[in-house]
Length: 195
Image (cartoon, rainbow, N blue to C red; front, side, top):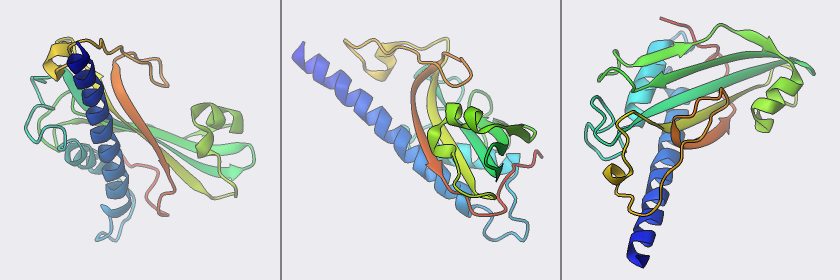
């Protein structure tokens, strides 16, 4: 039983480490993907390519794609803010998800319309998104392994632990594990343009 317990904790650590690596890889690609373009603004197709590329460290196979052999799929959510004044922020959220599609151009992706939020709403989303000066920008990345209906803990080699679904900022409960990262984006990348 001690060996099973140790195995389960190692598996959780391994999945968290893979997700952390994916988050940093995605953040780096967000910063660099438009370097060779004259138009630096990111598009929803860029989000799809970044999501696809950053998931490939899972088991180096096609297990993150349909039919999701491990009962989980990978997704990225991003939350961009730009301070206009002390209590007014531009805001956009979007996502890329491997819940459908098996190639960079067929996976689900979206960027919402830009809206306005107050300082208290930004703090609720994540305290590290609060900017110091007018014109400053921040982006919160949330990379996650989300559960499908065919999820079974034994497929991920859990023997004793029973992973529980957690809620994200929007009340969705299908997250197995997630990792959050806040960065300062290069100017001109956001807001995301839907294509």
